[in-house]
Image 1 (cartoon, rainbow over the protein chains, first blue to last red):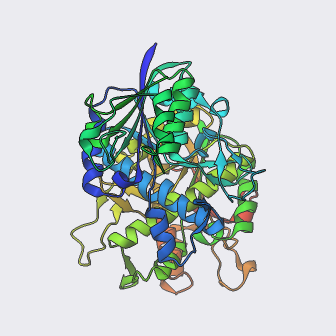
Image 2 (cartoon, each protein chain N blue to C red):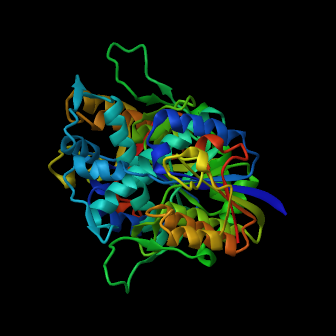
Length: 258
Length: 258
């Protein structure tokens, strides 16, 4: 089976011009075919703040109202996505920026039935992904660059977690490709001590993850990230890594195992 | 030769939800293949104002500095482009939103050598357009939806006039398709008296345009629009129309002739 690399980069890299340039240098060195998924980090929140749009949170979860969604679409599908595409074209790598609405690649369902109304948040499923056009693009040596914006097929754009998009795309494409899924962020991998880059956990099993969750070693944003990553691993993804963006082309990082 | 319709819609339609929905209804009724190019109107200026980004003008021409470019990319390539794509998918029409950086379809050159420094403004030429991927998309029954953002192939995004993008795309594709180019806006066509929708000029020749320019009947923004439209007509475009967005599927409007 043909190999495919799916790389997700986080907002802290995307929002730093120098870090982004360095990441893109590494990304362009990877063999084709490959897919890039990007987050947006705090840039949407910053723009909300500058526009006096209140950031609504409920139990640590953001509520995406109409104005917040507009900002997310502007920042993620607009500025960040096109900035990355232009930088890739410079190399030259033939990139195509996509939201989930484009080519109807990622249909989503507005989250409902939860205690809290999260607003315009889209939940996605691997068997809903339209893999036909992704395969056609990859066959043409094109690099799809996904922002975390989806749609409900009824004309409504939705905001979806970028880690989830990377994981769900991987699962959807696993019947056609032997997939390596790599989450890149600004640390060397999952750490025993988050202040010590020397405390890298090179191999992480699900049991070990549970243990480290229970004792508080792994906490906050790393928990949903690892949950999402393990979700992919459980569903036929060959290899899943968590790496520093600068180490993309090296073996340094955390490899997940069931 | 296969027919192709290239439709440009202006900012005043794009910025009005109801008008946009009506336009999209008409647009979806057109035969395939077709391309949509959209402007952004004053929505980028509004966002600049809300963000306290000063709007710099010189002799009535906008200067695109770094912050203004970011706003243009967010609004044109982000919010407006993806809103249109999501609305088209609802019908369902398989749309793909594009900037000129995506697939390197519209390489541009940063304007230079002018008396005024316009900033991040991109000039484009028909023989630089990468028509290969446009043809591939149209063959797959995909509807390309272009925002007015281009790039210099060196990693820099640029702002380009949307009327010009429609005209230059038409010229670039004229060797492969028999093209109808239609500029849609919020008036019934070119008018003798801009306050009187009954004063429609049904046929406009270049000589007549010169005459009406000289006597002041045609003025302001209509002059560059018609210049751009005639430019296309001079370069092998079959038919060029200026129409009300609501009249897209009718014969009502101004037809240009050399």
